[in-house]
Image (cartoon, rainbow, N blue to C red):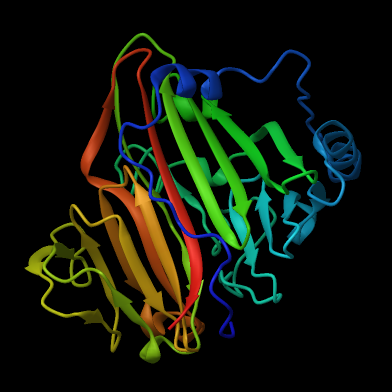
Length: 342
């Protein structure tokens, strides 16, 4: 990724509690009457599925359903400024975010597979309803290896270049209830605001009993070299160092102005601030501004992966304080990524 210009639109941080219950309930409601649900029973049906979804939800030149890597149905967002993003329906994984210059910001590992045999390794996959290992379900939960459905799309090229956006939804099924016996609805909106990438995640308890969950956005960011990367905004925070024993992490205090990399790193920064940035080593940094995510995770596998020099994960997580939702209650979080020159 090369250095790019500062995004045109200044960031306006969102205040906690800004969004009303009524607003979130509307956004978490079932898709409007007549919304399309399409399933392909075989590979031969994927093209037909994509065509039907695109006919129903596509907005030419702004929101298109296309065949992504491995032929996976993928929503491509394109802003009038030239930026773009791609989100697969499998796992609701953001696999690409490009600036107007064409520079890719995210990183997808070369060992990633796109046949649904496992979660996509790279981009921004989900961790829900579990961040980390669990005795009852697979690592990082099930949301990243299930098909999500398109609930809505929006964009308006006139008169103000309204941001292209897609909202994907995930609900319980027999598979999820086999490991997590709860009824829920997750609505995940991804949008471009100029060159900024925005994600809005809402979780609603649609059942009759309370449940707890943890979550994360497992963000892979491309860097010129991991040893040149720097993470800023974490000094003074308590963190859990999981590099030696993930099940028994060592609690430490971050003393560094800049977190650097010289070996494996797996750190969960507790009660983090709502802003952190990753210097990618090109004269640019990726900034992350969040709301309602309690923690920040910094991860590099180092040389256990051949591609380790090319990325660093800086992730928003809800780990130190699991969310408890009573029936009918919801949780909402936002995250915004931008690229700035240093």
